Length: 391
Ligand SMILES: *[C@@H]1O[C@H](CO)[C@@H](O)[C@H](O)[C@H]1NC(C)=O
Ligand SMILES: *[C@@H]1O[C@H](CO)[C@@H](O)[C@H](O)[C@H]1NC(C)=O
Image (cartoon, rainbow, N blue to C red; front, side, top):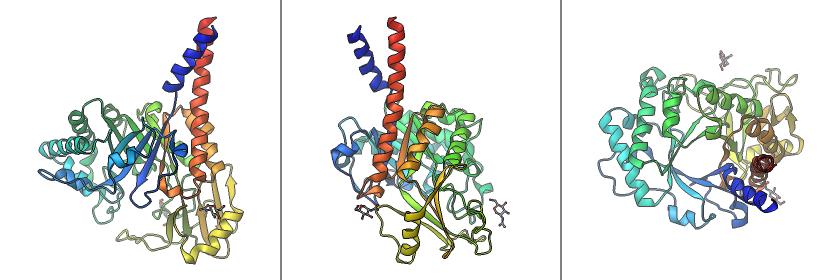
């Protein structure tokens, strides 16, 4: 009996482990020692440009590294994906999605790239089908409405070209206002083509907002996940996004932040006509140099940040400089596991991005610990089940 429980345990331990995905970016191409990455199941190399795949016969596949170089830096069974697109890189997808011929060409080239690089699949980062991308003020969403129907067809053509064994994931928006292409009608079609969804539950406050929020807050993240699940994403195919970076935003000196810093007014952060960044908000990773003009405020923030239990988020409001700071501490990362990952039964998590947490790897370690709690709880459920079966 002990032996059979042991065998069930071993079998379930593998099946029950959560997906643990890291974007590895060209901006911060740093990989820690093997013991820190041994639990990572997938790495997505960000990014390859979308427009390459519209060329008649591309002969080069520009990327900041190679799949084989990265493969050697991770555990043997880690899947290596090439992420295509990224913020601001929408034109190539739009062009690809437009006609049957352009979709087929794009899909054929994705297959050629995967064959050439030896990748295990692709991550499609179209931000976003249907609009609200970087160019939303200059190319209105009304001109992109057709993409909402075309997006699932493009994914379907990519799936047909790659076959069932390669991995296809998509990075999908975390704010409901950006989920233009993810409706009750389209999500089942999208789901049929994908292995999993990377729900970008960060930047949930951005320069288009006018009140302070937690950029990767617990309640906002939960709301994002629920939006997808409600529209037909199976929870086990959804991954929760984590941010290994800090965001800051200038608040309005007369915006009421002294009375209540959460939900108080910011200054105008984006040009309402052009959509241009007005320099009143920004981000930097744990690996970046803190911008000189923010050093003093950030030091205060690091030493005095608080956790908002109601909305779920670590924050600091600098009263002297009128700056709202928002980032996840290891504790804030930890809290999302029982409240979101376990609660909804999500299949995994991901972070943007691995090297962004160098050189201390504090957030990576917290995320790995969280992943172990969900993998373990599934294992112990399975063991309970196996034991009941025995009895
Ligand atoms: C603040 O943003 C909301 C939408 O996020 C908008 O409805 C509202 O008009 C904005 N308020 C101001 C003062 O710009
Ligand atoms: C990394 O650790 C060192 C030494 O403990 C510390 O001085 C530094 O501030 C840490 N860096 C970050 C980004 O946390």
